[in-house]
Image (cartoon, rainbow, N blue to C red):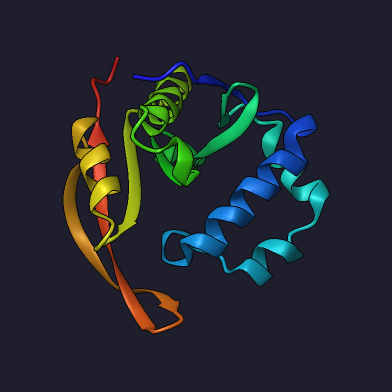
Amino acid sequence: MTDATIRAATDQDVHTWRALRMDGIKRHPQAFMVSAEEAAAIPVEEDAARLSSADRFLAFLDDAPVGLIGLNPHGMPRTGHRGEIGPLYVVSDARGQGVADGLLMAAMDAAQAKGIWQIELSVYVENRPAIALYERHGFSVTGKIPNAIHGADGFEDDLLMIRISDRT
């Protein structure tokens, strides 16, 4: 495990969040739903507002930002029990140290606190480390999304994974 500090992001973290997200998009474009151009076009104020909702988390090692995760509650009355994970990104130097586990646990705890007991995500079919991470935390593959992303080399498929917790 790691000595990473994981905390809820705030609107004051907007530039850190944007820099980490952009780093992830540039290094692993197949792991993100948005392109670098689309991410850059998101107004800073929109990102700051999103960070104010207490469902985005940052990880730090020795005060350096090394990872991020988002929980996206569905929010409608009929789907309020559901939420989606994404994005999740950890910089290469911090991988293998439990940072992703800590981020995922923080998002799952936030989901539980919000009454979300079904957490969903999509993951690139060839992202074996991420799939293993999610499986360690109780996610199961429930389907495949063909042509989920139009990447640089054509269309890429994602797996749909879901974790259903106790409804308490």
